[in-house]
Length: 149
Image 1 (cartoon, one colour):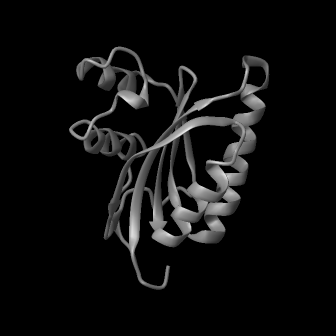
Image 2 (cartoon, rainbow, N blue to C red; image 1 turned 180 degrees about the vertical axis):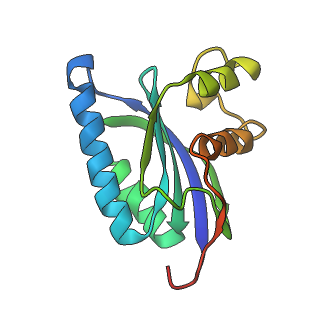
């Protein structure tokens, strides 16, 4: 069984008045779907951008991305920034943890000469520490995937 970690970015299509409602719907449907499919991760939103890290079986994560996320009208310009096979997960405690823009993640972009938060500016050098920072925001211990998950 192959487990993967995927980081993707997208631009929100929501206008300000509907944004809070859309975020709540996205989180609720993600928690529901992810818990049934043993997918974990974190969703981060700021400055009109989503960035989400997903972990789980490759077939389940791929299905979620290509058949749900890409077709969701609340996202546009969805792009996979990072995709790797993993044996160790970082987000075990969250079927979908949500975080708005915060100081530590904002500082990460400034320190890496990326101005404000814009996930499309992440590079192959900055994506791994960004994912570690996302995981560290939630103080979790890495875990090993089991074949029966």
